[in-house]
Image (cartoon, rainbow, N blue to C red; front, side, top):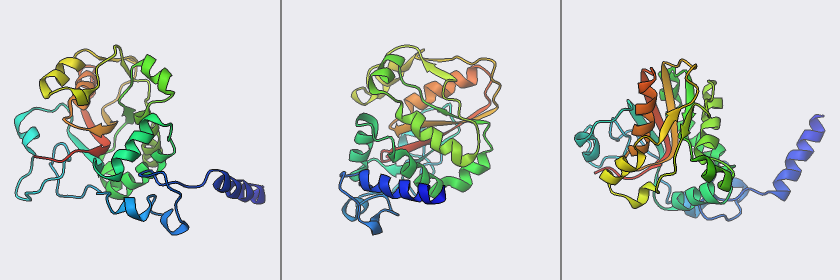
Length: 243
């Protein structure tokens, strides 16, 4: 059985060789442990410790604790952390992850998240992991929810339950990237409902793919707090720059 498994693994690598998430090029053996080709990896910025204490955006000024956005607005979540800055090769990786069925990228994203934030994630002692849901019709067309795929990997690493049907998006919304901050909030009003009201959770880790202003995280967190959840922490794959 062990020999069969080894043969299957080798065969899978030959048929489905590892490719760079950033540019889709084949990875050399020495690049596979990194997950990106050399050229793309040079453009990948991992989010370090010099970040906004609230949303996790990187800050250029190390004397500040919050970015300009967070200093001006209230968030319903306690904290967000993100793995990568949304720039360079990560933009291509996220596009393929979301629209080209590259669900296998989730394992790399999750391991990079764990390497950076494993201690923090364990310290939260959450009762479960919840992905930001997609509208059902949109998910059927795409075939999957990229936030759910990433969330499943994180839940496994944390050894906590995944509640991927706890929150439902009850209406279609416009893409957030096309809207200003005021319209983002309006766009998401009453867009989320809690379906499994019998589940009693005290602390939740909410997962999304891209954090821009936090409007989506806030609306889902607000809905969760309204049914008795006490604290919502967040984790995103990538995030924009702070101001």
